[in-house]
Image 1 (cartoon, rainbow, N blue to C red):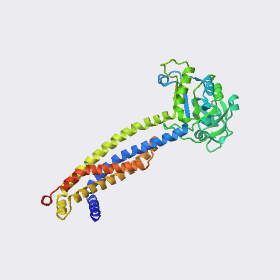
Image 2 (cartoon, rainbow, N blue to C red):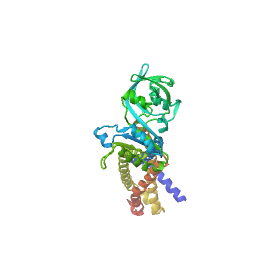
Image 3 (cartoon, rainbow, N blue to C red):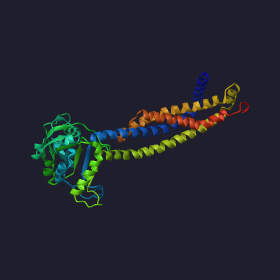
Image 4 (cartoon, rainbow, N blue to C red):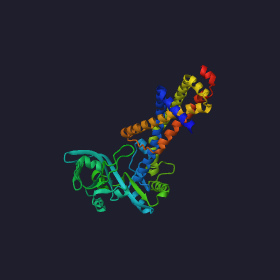
Length: 404
């Protein structure tokens, strides 16, 4: 035990004595550890964000939009889902407890007194807040009678409410949607942003009939629908049921692409994986290259150190130090240096992750895994690349070392 403590003490003294070598090694290791730690944290953050978004989206829900992927790419007609499709779906799917139509208009100018803003107007039924598990926190929801009566009432998102009303309670106030006065009956809870950075709270919800008849001059087509099922475990099966149902309704021949798009929680996870993938690959390659370079820097500096300290090694061997004492001392120095590099790398990773979250709203979550991976990799670099110089130092013959 005393011998081990003495070896550790000598390793620390050597690290302190060779300051420039230590600095170069620490910096090279820190860059590699920082990159890989950010990767681990980004993967954790993406997974955590995916679970949050799936919970927000609804693990038992499907979202169906008009227009297939090919149609979207070629600019073909996007509205292919009708009110009749939705009414038939309500009767066809007994396993669904909500079938809610939606239609939307983007960049619609809304105003209150002297304040104007362009926002998203969504038309839906009184089940919209239930369909999205998006509660009304002020006022009340609009009713089915409002939908049937084409009434000018609506719900407002919190971002839009702040833009138009500031700190004033918007409930009961009127907003001009183009030239139509709409009374705000309720305010939705705050939702934040999408992974792409779009504000979810920048919207107004009005009865679908009001939007279709008074703003769109439309009686048949809607943008899409949202379906929630009792048994979320069979959601993939239900998605295929919905696909077959809509293909039959739209009389799409076999082999032809869908004229609609179904989004499920799995699609959201795929999107987040794609979002984080490019950054993970870039940082991964950078991190591995940095660690390899750090390892070579460490190995070369230690080989130089062995030459400079040949006489010291010879004297220690002559004084009774064993080969393994010399080996462990040099390995100890390498581990101490790479541990310091790991600590600085983790600090650098924390700073860079905050920068990424601030600039790109990137989901990053540091857990014990990021710290554990960082420290283990730093020790692997220290032992792996420090072993050859340590062996060379341990195998020096005492008399020749003293003469040298």
